[in-house]
Image (cartoon, rainbow, N blue to C red; front, side, top):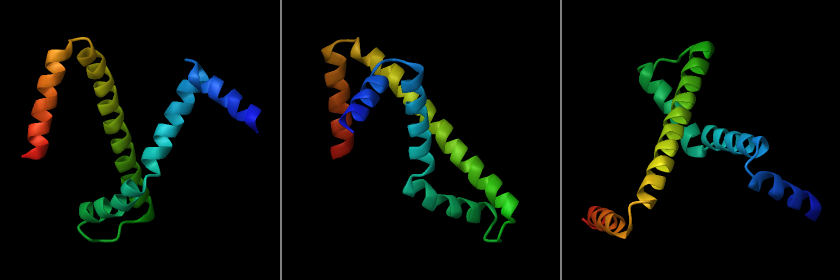
Length: 109
């Protein structure tokens, strides 16, 4: 069992197709199977249909569209955060302190 975990760790820690594929699948699964999102899907469908019960096909279509929309939105935000994080890491200490103070001020009121 230790050998299996060691092999998996080595396969996923190196930049490879396996690592990127595993990260993609885990991200999709964590978004689509999240209890927060699963609970909101019926609420969104109920709101869209104004409380009327949709057909099975329409419910599947709406819930799939909602889940894919969440996936794409969070993916785009992740890419943007990754790119901005790299950019922000290269600007020096002063801008990071200024942004930290602004965020602290916004959080503390």
